[in-house]
Structure formats: structure tokens, C-alpha cells
Length: 426
Image (cartoon, rainbow, N blue to C red; front, top):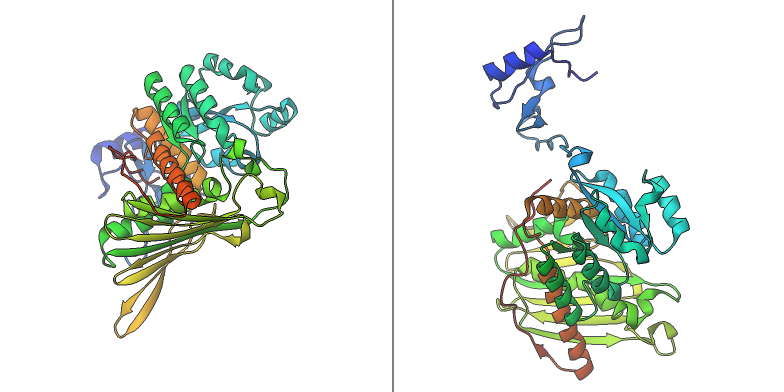
């Protein structure tokens, strides 16, 4: 049985005496009839959180601190807008791992599905709204933010509607289907003084963050080349992803955007030139409106070149490879929901050494949602605000123009940085 039975008088004594080398209140009376627990086992409270001294040898990595979730009443409440596969398979379950966020409402076009899902997640039927009733969220004080998981072309409308009723907006990528729509979303949220964040989950995922840190550290010399692949074999239609009006494009905005965004956040730069080629099999009606595949390259001011491939017609692969002057970093499943790894190759003595770096996995959706909640509560810019999505939309349009005109297209960096403060660990 864990030792956590501290009497009030004993807790006060420990608080005043400050016995722990860590400066936290440790120790306590054990259960009657058992030996007194050690300071190492009991832990204590520091800055409103439970903490323990390190119990492992210095040759071992330290264990993570205990989770410190906010009380439910203090968490940011979200209305998830649309109950498709992504919402049901990833986003709603992720709230169970959130520490600063909670599910508060659902918006769906299917009352039957909404009733079932509400019951599964402990929401009353009154917390389920239809799209026509969206504005009723204004009168639900338990909802501070919306998470928009609708098809791409609908992002602008529901972002503007949310801003108009004073709700913060977390919007799935891609941000929109045009630069004009993305700009309108940024403007609407700015004028309403609500926060807007685009759900670039990989920018909050620990392995991708480690890759960014490795580039910035210079441990492997200068970064020279990036290879990014995001391909999957899609099934039959009809699907909204095959509709130009709903999706805005094919493989590029859906999965190619991961490669594009990764090249930008890995380098910390904006490309100065882009080149692209698209391909769709003939006589396959799925690709009547959108591309099946796209290959594209990006050239950055530092000289880094990025080669990227996205396709709906190849077996699942979501890898990222970074080539440095003095080593190579390979990241299998860099863009997947789970399963990320990192392997670093470099000279070790007279041979090439290959090491795997093991990092604690975290639920990417829970991490990004909690980041937004943290920034909402502190009234600070999120790490991936609307400006980040807007820049990707500008570059996506440049890539399509390159493919259509069969030539490289010159691009310009935005006037101001597109990212907010770096996300905190946790």
C-alpha cells in the first residue's frame, strides 16, 4: 500500500522544518502497526504538486514526475465540432489523457450519433447541438473553446461563427482551402480577441521536438537535406477527400502538408523556392477532381534542400530523414499517430555508430489540446497560431502553381514569425 497517510500536525511539522534536501515536505506517519515510511517513499507537495526525490541510481534516467492535472472545474471546456472518424477514433479518447482540458459539448449533423457519443463520454443530451444550433454555444459557459474537425472547406465558416460568439478556436489542418479563407479566419479571431490555433500535432510530439532540438544544437553539424514521405493507400469513393469543393485538393493538403510543415519547423526557415509535380492514374474516377500523388521540393535560405512525397496510392509510410554534415537522423513513423522512433548514425571511433534514442511517448492529440488550453488560460499566443496555417496555405498554392506551370516558383517569407512561444513539456 502506498504511504500517504499524513496527520495534519505532522504535515505542518514537515512544512516548517523543511527536512527534505529537495526543499519539499517529505516524510509522514505510516499506517498503524507498520514501519515508519522513508522520505524517499512518501514524497510531498511543492508548488501545489506532489513530488518525490529521485529514487534511481544516477546511471539511470530519472522517472517523470507524477501527473498534475487541473481539477475538472478549472479545465478549459471544449465543444468538438463534427463526429467523424478522427473525432471518434483519436480526439474524443484523447480528452481522457488531458490534464488541462475537458470535453464539454458536441456539435453534429446526426442527432442519433450525438446521443450515443454523449452517453459514452458522460455528457447530457443538452450538450449535443446541431450545426444550425451552433450559436447556442454562446449560452454554455462551460464551453470556452471549440475544436473544429469538419472538412477543410468548412473551417472558415465555423471559425468565424465561433469567434462571433466569443469562443476560442482549435482547428484541424489544413487550415483552409485558400489563402483568402485563411486570412479571413485570422482576422475574425483577432477582431473578436479570441485565440486561434491550428492542430499541427507533430509540432507537439516528443520525437519531432527532439529533432528540432538536435538541429538547433549543431551536434551533427549543419543540416543539409531533408527527406519527408507521407503516403497511404486510400480506398474507394465517395469520400469527402476526393471532392475539390470540400478538400481543396488531394494528397497535398491532407497528408503532404505534414511534409511541408515539417521542413519548415525542422529548419526554422521559410523556403525561397518550391517545385512540384502531381500525378493521378487515368480512368480512376476518384482523381477526377483532386491529385492522387505529389512530389515537391523546397529550397531554404541556408542551402537546405527538402524533397517530399505524398500519395494516396502507395502503401503506408510516414518517415522523416535528416542529413547533416556529420550524421544522419532517421525517424520512422514521424507523422503517424503512434510508433515514432529516432535513430542517429555518425562516426564512432573508426566505424559508423548507430544509436536509437528512446523518448517517452505521449498522446499527440492530448498534448496539443492541453497546449491550447494552457495558452487560452494565460492569454498567450499558441505555438501554432493561425499565421502558421496561413503560411502553409500560401506555400501549398505556390506548389500547385509550380505543378500546373511546370516550373519552379519563387516564394517570400512572411513579414512576422508564424509561431508562438515554444510549447512547454508536460
